[in-house]
Image (cartoon, rainbow, N blue to C red):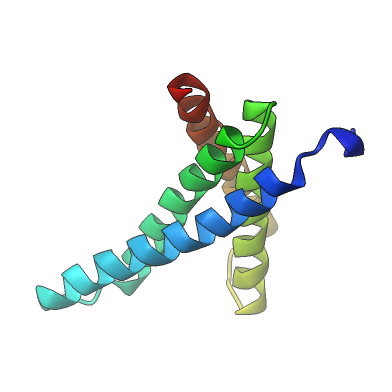
Length: 119
């Protein structure tokens, strides 16, 4: 199975998720700041959710096995978010983090499905 992985699709999906999450979070935060609100947490949450879908889309669009690589790219990004939250002292339990990875797989599959249908 290791030979069947298309690493360029996975790595570009991870990179696209990082860029998408950063841009969406920055745009939402800037819009909220312009309205006089402090919505940093909500901006980061929406950024991560859009980043997971973007990882699935890019990972699925660039590979032959669309669903598999889309889900795997989203799981890579979700795992990175989980590790970063644990390193920063998140009070989330391991069960909540596991549910987040299930959500990451679902959103990655959604992005990969859209990528497969658009070709």
